[in-house]
Picture 1 (tube, one colour):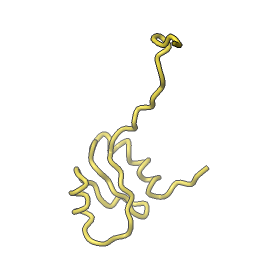
Picture 2 (picture 1 turned 30 degrees about the vertical axis):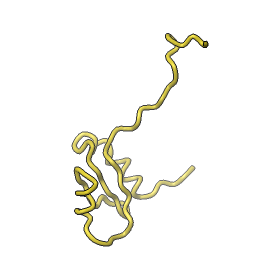
Picture 3 (picture 1 turned 30 degrees about the horizontal axis):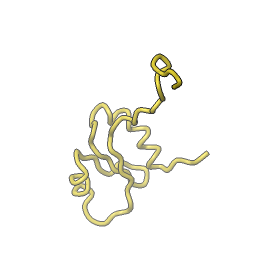
Picture 4 (picture 1 turned 180 degrees about the horizontal axis):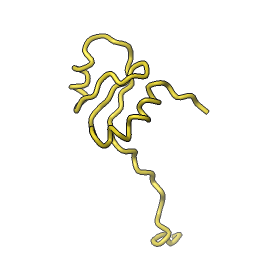
Length: 78
């Protein structure tokens, strides 16, 4: 079992609400705090400004659908 970083924990907590209000935007976390939120990566970089501690970036999108394989109704095993 792996321990989650403070950045990952806050991202997982905030993601459901951000999906409702800022879908397709970008968010940056540093030291367990949200430090920037912007509609594009370029704008996010501008908002973050000069040198700072490394950040963790995420795009606010829904999870990628999981591939489940062929439907049992159409798969004939050929």
